[in-house]
Image (tube, rainbow, N blue to C red; front, side):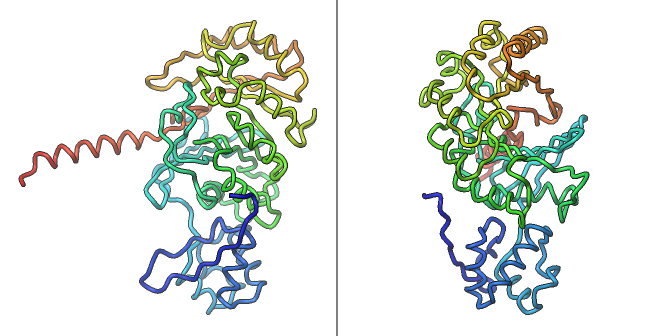
Amino acid sequence: MSGSQHAQVFAPAPDGGEEPRNLVGLSRAELAAEIAALGEPAFRAKQLWHWIYARGATDFAAMTSLGKAFRARLAQGYRVARPETAVAQESRDGTRKWLLRLDDGQEVECVHIPEAERGTLCVSSQVGCTLTCRFCHTGTQRLVRNLSAAEILGQVMLARDHFQEWPSPSEDRQLTNIVMMGMGEPLYNYDNIAKALKIVMDHEGLAISRRRITLSTAGVVPMMQRCGEELGVNLAVSLHAVSDEVRDRIVPLNRKYPLKELLAACRAYPGVHNARRITFEYVMLKGVNDSPAEAREMIRLLKDIPAKVNLIPFNPWPGAPFECSSPEAVEAFARILLAGGLAAPVRRPRGQDIMAACGQLKSASERLKKTEREAAKAAGCRSPA
């Protein structure tokens, strides 16, 4: 599929027919084509866009600048919907996690992390993940499918609903930043990610600046340049090792795109400079990647890339094959990087008590559903014929 968006026209569902179609996720061109197909003037599409993305309206009846007959017609064939919230949790540290149930029954998670001067929403891009990074809980799930643009946008809009930030306030916002760091590899779902983020960044849409959006990749090298050229968002790279030998083991994607190719793509990333650096994520694993020698090798590898390094103490999960590096080892690693000219903040784990911390996004409901299925199967075997 090319990066260009082609308008696709849908006729409204007849009464008693299929489920009304969700208008969330349609590009400007697609929304305009829908409205034209209804025989309405073009300015109606702009009005509808404003109500959906600037005002956050979900009820056509509330869209008072639209004619009453037109609102009734929209209500017959369309909807403005968010994913269903199956479970909402709040951590002791204020982190919030939502387990969202999609129209087909699949589930994903998104997380809001409050800080002193910003609030960051961690958004998922896939149901499950294909990368199988060995330290990541989400990586233990099989990949089910990509999320649609509507499902990606729906996570942001649901958080806005929760914080009552419609229209977006100019000050004291609780949702200021977005990181595509949830479940899945964003660059393996690029077309839907791009479509959603263009609406997020639209000054008449959700109006979140590209400078407040970060896309994280494990290193899908062929897509990195395109992402920079078309979206211009900040880039975070899941590095986690400084040799191909170790990275092959803990980030299997490295076997396809080894460090030399990954770092060349980082150097070429459009718009990268000293004021706008690439963030390298580095999870600290005891006895695996946390030696002083590896810190010095990182300085060598990144010496010509405008970069900062986020050191992430490993967040254990049941059955995890690793341990977290000791606080002393993490501190020593950070000191070496700092002395070598690399900013190296240690990320404070957030939301650990609700399994919302980095690398922990895996729905407990998956295990629950499996248990329920097994119980139902057993009950079925015992039931009389």
